[in-house]
Image (cartoon, rainbow, N blue to C red):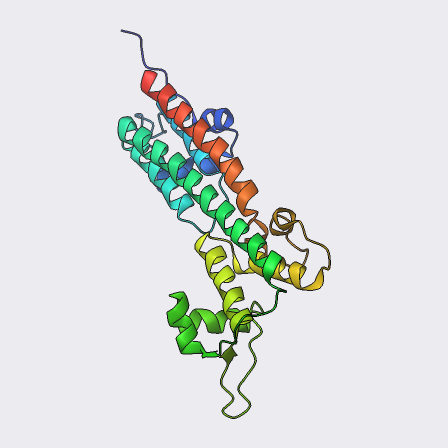
Length: 252
């Protein structure tokens, strides 16, 4: 039986293209399997730890703050770290399916947006006047969500001159439906605001995909990562690489 080869922290870091402190941090977070110590108290890493580090680096490439994607990626890493590679592979396959489902939702939301753009300037067949509470029930969302959209400039809803309450007409209701569908597809508020501003101020038909994928210089850095469809495509590639890495670890 071949003698087991051990590696230093610096060697594991070099193999995974990270700083040595990152290796120690991943161990602390439970992203690496337990690392035994030698008589001199030094960590004794094996090839399995190196492959686990590579797995973690692939999984953590995703920059999502929404959609539950990052949580799933971390779960895969921790499952593999516990030595259950078969379950980790199942989770990775489910992860890929989840990403593809998110892509479908994002695409469908843009189609709904496009249809709304095409008909938003058409004459209204009948006038509809709803208060905020009735609008929230109609759309199946909370009153707080509507208030939030109004406050952040996504909706401009006129007020009843008699009582000062917001009054939703057909145009406001249709716009709110579009916002609801985009939010359900995990587009950020900032990305939706970009799209709606472009539609409101552009006489020509805007390139929606380009707009949602191009943050403005003054936007918060959290939202600057929200290039939803393009990032989903990148994450799909990472998910496939993740599956290949786990299969490689299983074969070893």
